[in-house]
Length: 319
Ligand code: SF4
Image (cartoon, rainbow, N blue to C red):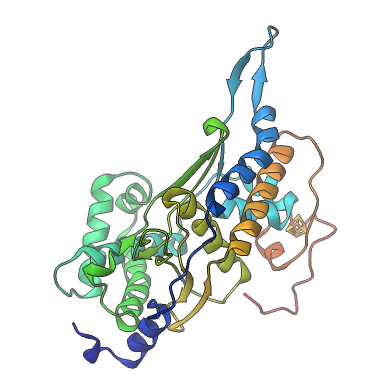
């Protein structure tokens, strides 16, 4: 499909994410190596704390700390809620399932030779996941026909919105869906990982060109931008050249929020991740008592009924 047949929403999105001609972005030489070494140095005390030393002074065992975007957001939110949530086992639900299934269907859009109706993509994604039998696939395989129909309908809305408002993903843009990013520190004791929803383009030598996109539903939140910055940091360490642009795309509004990647943005992200890592280790090892931080997240907190600091959300209709 050529740009000429794009609808206004698709055309506007394309204009906002494409690399402007004559405005290449470069980072100062040595910046990425310095950034990595700064992060390693700040995490080093934690690697020591995670290592058990035996009576002979030899490292006998080492715990691994894995940091994801959601773990970082949770521990930097309310520490008491973070620990309470830790104790609750994960369970699939329709709202979580529809997002995961939509990503799988969009992956089929990115790799498909032809334009296909969303429901066809969703059914194929669902069948593939059920055949795999793990994670969501295992849950879907046991779900009732009514639940499957509800998930199919909710997912269709997301995938249809993507098809309506995104230009077709051309192969020359090198689209990737849920590309796994991973960065290891301190000899693998501390690992950061995540999968951005979509990446477009790649660095051209030292010129930043990649666009990282997260697809969102519902209200805009500041954390969405922070999630993308985390991905940008991981991709910077992986490739050696940072991405160019970070995009939160709100499917039900057909709107995006974007920001250019800068050196200051990446440095601030290192500080945020290091802060989160220290908090996780301190709290899980009971080195100090957790603090509380009231907010809209009190609504979903398992401690809400007993917490003296719980926010009064009775008159709030936010989120
Ligand atoms: S109710 Fe609110 S302040 Fe209290 S622990 Fe939960 S999230 Fe934190």
